Every structure is written in structure tokens, then in C-alpha cells.
Image (cartoon, rainbow, N blue to C red; front, side):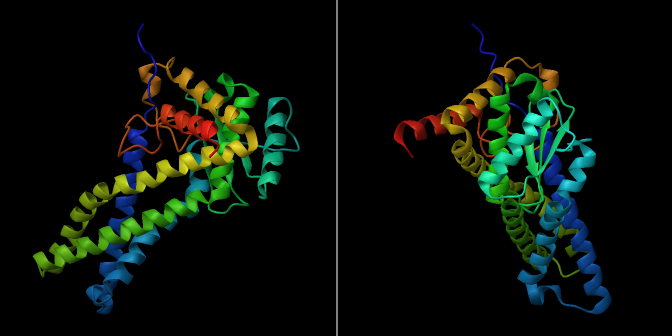
Length: 294
């Protein structure tokens, strides 16, 4: 019998993230060099400080604007808890209850149209976050399975994963920019050529450091799964992951190419360039934890 289980893809989302990050770094580099030229500043006299300003500004810009941008980009409908009814009421009540257990202000609850089962959390403050679900997930999972996904996403909020990933990306950016500047200044002493070489090196090194950043991303998924078990139990979390796995086998290749955000599904590009561990890896980790009481 043919194995229809597929791993969900996010290559375009990864490339979009990488391109956006590099583009912002390149823009900030040009601005920084322009200011240094106009005001006679010596960039290389404060290599780390200058690199950190550019590197962290890119990561922090993405962090602070992510909630606002994603709401509009994904056309997310926010569920008003005071007006919710039916299943929306059930989800809203579950969100409030779990948030209270975790000691945070309930995030905004959002829904967006997408046949691919996915969910994500975003927002730079724990008490002002957003948790959103795709219609594909809501239409193909039971209430208990959706609650397990919710517990996973709330764990990201409580763990401060959005801030953590921004800081890791900022550190990676700083190293990329610092190394690029050292190499470019050693190759040529012409300002214009240094700027151009800087941008080329940032692109190459930005891609080279991506696996390091994504390794941390995969670890936060394991940690969110584990924390979610405190709310829904090991069995509840495993059941939700197995439901996603079953659904992934039934989705066409066309749907499989759709861009997904930082959802609970696994990425197609397993290994170094994967944002998530595979569903099998996550299920096995939880099963091992359950058997061994860890």
C-alpha cells in the first residue's frame, strides 16, 4: 500500500523570511553608510556596535510589526468573545480558561481562510498576543484536537518564543554584518565597493547562518509541545499531531505548495532548513516522554 503521508512544505515562507531579513539589513547598511559618509563617522571604529544596530533593528522591526502585518496579510477575522457563539464561543472560552491557567491575558483569537490545517501565535508581548487558526484546521479537527493545538500556540506565547527568536536572529545578523564588513574592508578600501561587497556577503552569510536560527526554531516546537501537555495531557497533544498527520496524507500536491506561517504543521524541508521537526519526530518525543515520565 502506498504511503500517502507527506510532510508539509514551507520553503517559500522560509525564503520570504530570509529575503525580507537580508533586504532590511541591506537597507540599514546603506542608511548607516550614508550617515557615516555625510557626518564623517568611522564605521570600523565601532564594528560590533554598528553591526548590532543594523542586525537587531531588522529582527526587532519584524518582531514589533509582525502582529499588525500578519492580521492584514492573512485577512484574519478576530473573534469577539462577547459576541461569539457556537464553536467560536467554545474556542473563546477555552482560550480564556487556558490563558488563566498560564497566568497571561487571553490573546486575540483569530480565524483565516486557508484549506491547509495550520495555527500560529504572534505578538511581541505575552499579554497582547494573537492566536489564529486556519479554516482547514477548524474544519478537519475535533474540538479536543483544536484545543490541543491552542495549548501548543499558547505555550509559544508564555515561553516568549517570538521575542526569543528575534534575539537569536539579531545575534546572527550582527555576526553576519560584522564578518561582512571585516572581509569587505580587507578586500578594498573604496567606499562604494565596500558597500556593494557588504551586501553580497550579507546575502551569502545570511543564508549560511539560517540553519542555526532554524535549529532554535525546532527546539521551541518541542518545548511548546511539552508545555501543552500540562493543559491537555500527553495523549491529547499526540492525538492532535496524529490528526494533522492523517490530514497531510489527504492533501493534494497543489495545496501542499501553499505558503503557511509558523503553524503547528511540519515543514517539507526536513533537516537543517526546517522550521519545525516532522510530525513523527514530535509524536515520538512526546511518546518517549510519556513512557519514561520525563
